[in-house]
Length: 303
Image 1 (cartoon, rainbow, N blue to C red):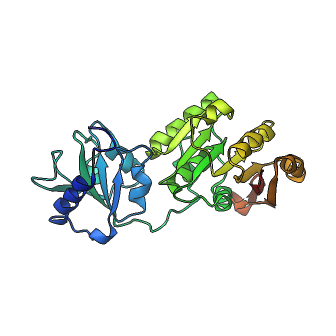
Image 2 (image 1 turned 30 degrees about the vertical axis):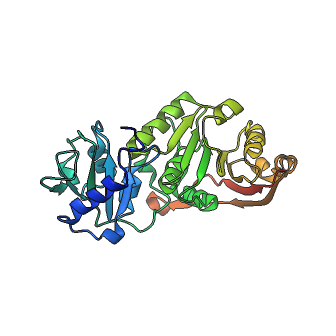
Image 3 (image 1 turned 180 degrees about the horizontal axis):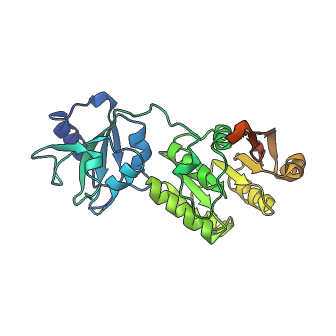
């Protein structure tokens, strides 16, 4: 059976009816999630829904461990031992199931009494895998994501912004994120984060050129860290999407002050430049100031 037809309308309704007989949940509020389809991520979905009916394929050996590792151990999981919606319904706390895998294509109901109604941006840096990356402060990341205005169905391109790519993927649950990592060490850290957060809607590529961009969705929005290749990147991306939304991060005042020289030839308009300063109170009641980047937003109107 193909991946697309593994769970059709009839089987989905059967699983809903099966759990409705035993599990305490409101059908009106249940979220359906078929993670056998490409680009569907279970962790951010369960985090923001009180009831999620997850359809899985056999062979996922550590799905419950990843969910527990993401802080979902208090969720209640309702399941059975087979691949059909029949027989005894079992349930347990997810924290008691971390050694279990998925051995059959089936539905399982995950109840999260602590679910948030919306995704909360600006995760603490301690949640990310360390590796080679020096992450931007969570307060600054919150502003960047606010300026990006990522929506559920967006296609997002993030160049050298690992934590931004992770949080964008958690927001764009029905969309996709492409992370560009020029450094092999940073690519490894990015892939480690993807696995750590159980994200299936991120692709990682190692450069921005015509060949690489043929393999990924055309972006609606791009976030990039300013670099020597920024002008060439924007030239290609605005040709692919003449109405591209752009967010640039830089610590170089010269880049911020002279950005029009990059934007004007490419037909990029509606520029806004802000600077963010964050100071934190440390030991001995002294404030420590973090690097103060410029955040540049604009929109392409290329003809």
